Length: 105
Image (cartoon, rainbow, N blue to C red; front, side, top):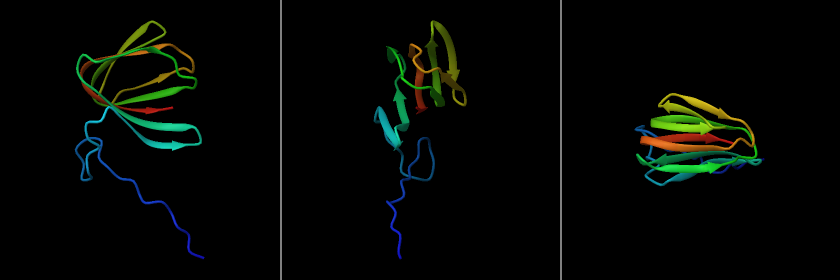
């Protein structure tokens, strides 16, 4: 019996060998069983206002520099850094220089 699978998804989020993801603001890379991996881009000076996530969120910075404020505590992050936001915690983002991030929620 032959098993069929969906086509393989590939791309480059930085400067790899695959087709670049492009300049869209957000791209859901994976959505499975209610969990998502989201690629987002931000321009310098861009802001994401305070909001809440129902579940824990992991933010990984691929490029750029941002300030992420969680529970009124601001943390500057840059390429290579990550931050775990507790479930339900109010958080906001201020982009200091053009940035690319991965969000796991």
